[in-house]
Image (cartoon, rainbow, N blue to C red):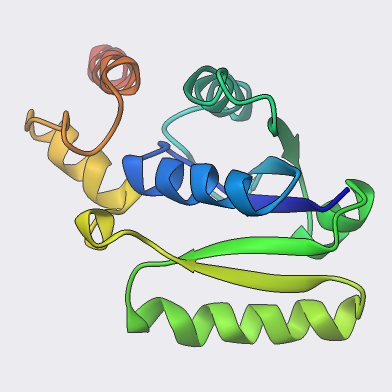
Length: 163
């Protein structure tokens, strides 16, 4: 079985992420989405919320699993018995950083390769940061995320305003 991991913060998950996830699921027998628990950042959603959102978004594809992890992506890949890390590239600006990470991971664990998937052109501009910024100003994010994710984003933002 060819198993790959797709690690990221997914805060929030976007159509760009979903594009990469679904395409990776066509290339591998199983894709494990790794939701990073990074204690140095203050995400909009908790790790559990992000895991649940991704599970909901991918529930119709039995080849996709969702888990949380802390630490290095390469260690997560090893723990999942995966020999491939999937990374999405939106623009040339992503490539330099992602190449450096892929080379570092390969040095740390020679049995784990990185596969880059170029994001579909319709999502090449899209980032989680952009989604949060547009939503924070009350903009329409329906073209960026699934409807149920948009509702969760607006709900979370309104809760923060009440604090």
